[in-house]
Amino acid sequence: MQKAIAVLSLLLGGFSCRGEESQWYKGNTHTHTFWSDGDDFPEMVADWYKNHGYDFLVLSDHNVLSQGEKWKALRADQANVAIKKAEQRWGSGHVKTRIVDGAKEVKLLPLDQVRRLLEEPDKFIMIEGLEMTTSRGGLAVHSNPMNVSELLPVERESERNVEQELNTHMHLVNEYSQVSGKPVFWQVNHPNFRFSVTGEQLANVDFLEGVEIMNSSSNCFNLGDGTRPSVEGIWDIANTIRLKSEGQPPIYGTATDDTHDYHLENPAVNGPGTAWVMVRAESLTPNAITRAMKEGDFYSSTGVLLKTMEFDPSRKTLTVEVDAEPGVHYKIEFKGSLSSVSLAHEPVAAIVDEKGVAHPVTANYLDESIGKTFKSKKGTRATYRMKGDELFVRAVVHCDGPPYFKYDDYSDFEKKAWTQPVGWKIDR
Ligand SMILES: [Zn+2]
Ligand SMILES: [Zn+2]
Image (tube, rainbow, N blue to C red):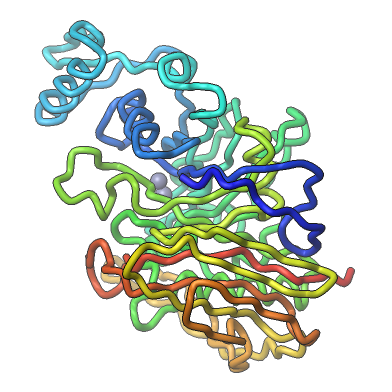
């Protein structure tokens, strides 16, 4: 983990203004446990992340907070492996069990007990959250509000369409944030999981702050499927529409593990530790981390770390410097859209799957300046000076280090880093 003190500058349309020293903190904002469909105890999950250099973790189980008393029936294979590991780690008798109707159940620790076991000031914290999970036919609307301590209840199956369901999630998050007074960072998860959410739909959600541009669990089609665009492409389209025609700030891109499986031999897909965020915050507290993410003061990574990420609004420069690994070569790209961009597009018909479910598709935008590469430079440090005709600019860092896994042609396991869009202005 990088503990270098970040260089600060006055920032606009991008990273925040901070008046004091801040640090980089590594975290995962999307993780599952036995509280829903993950395959390990919450304290084991948190222990894994803490032992692998993470500073914070959000447990985001489906439609549930880890609160109160919960007993869970485990499959025999899960029970044997998980209970054995938990008792090795925490001592025999750690896992409470009971038999109900002939089936073995285990008692799950609520978050406050997990915190007592693992949290350490300035070293590791848990941030409370959940994955609001709605299915609509064969489509999935999943979103994570981070830093909430009340259940935001959504219907597991909904008759509402994707737009209406996204708005339902949004209203619940907004109301919670207003009533509680707490900062909440809200992201839409894996738009290409079941090809459920389009760029236009993301563009139209008020108050949306984040979208997963990289989710390393299976079937998330981060690179699209050859017909439908990559999530990174969808992200650029959504942000171009928001800034150009809707007077809305851009959505920030997150990378997450969405971990479900903790007992794999090769943990690249569904396992922990492959996609995360690096957040620049004043302190390691749930509110400080969440506030920094709301301000876009973070980058996403699948293995490339940055020494410098600075946007200087007076000089209109975005500078990125890689924390280079020996023997690895880097390429830094600056991408964005032009202010003069045309949003002219051809609609693309929904794709109907073998079950008869119609999956909406992001339109075909005709102007090549959406998500255009403004500059590409080999090396570990590069600066882009805005010319004044950009709607926004962001950086993405590639490297020739080995990808850690190849799952299929549509999942991306290249080691990369992505900064957030900067240099944008909203005309209201
Ligand atoms: Zn999900
Ligand atoms: Zn998930």
